[in-house]
Image (cartoon, rainbow, N blue to C red; front, side):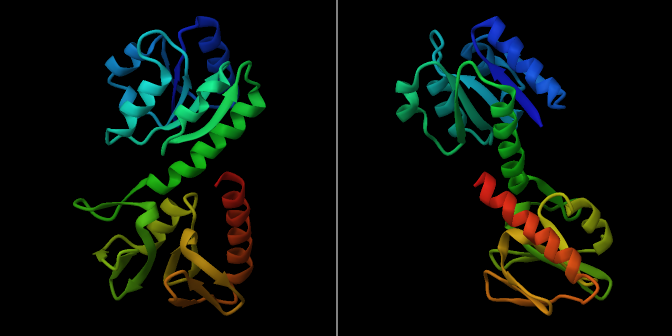
Length: 230
């Protein structure tokens, strides 16, 4: 993930940077003020932003409102000494509030949440003309020499890219191969048993005997993650 740290206190920025590095994150961008963040070309490409609320001139609330009015989808983790600002700080991109001094364990939990939620917006390339966000994909299936990508809105796209390539690409994004001919987006699964899988749309899909133990374990882990982070 690309992580931004915006705080007008140098020591605070450095501590958060060291925490992020210790947690294995490498793409870290530091901003000494709200103005510096808005002027930066990197500001709109961040996956997560550790944002101080109280800063001179352009504060964290203004930054949040600016990001919400752009095409950027950056998850914001507010970090503050002033809890009285929290009512103003809620927003569609805000996923957590941390009070200073932040511990590495608190930060790890919030960044894990951002990474989990970011999967929904990951773009999957169907062919050279079409890319689709993960959350909009219902399932993929094989039909003759084509892979059909079926979307939640009822539309579909076909490609000669083989299903096994999609399996590799989607395995860490909440998808699972339940049959040699089907890859399902677990986000839209309503129920699963030894014989079939039922989506929220009411559609059913066969689960092969060979795949069931693997599918069941994957779905269990996915459900636990969803309960933890949403």
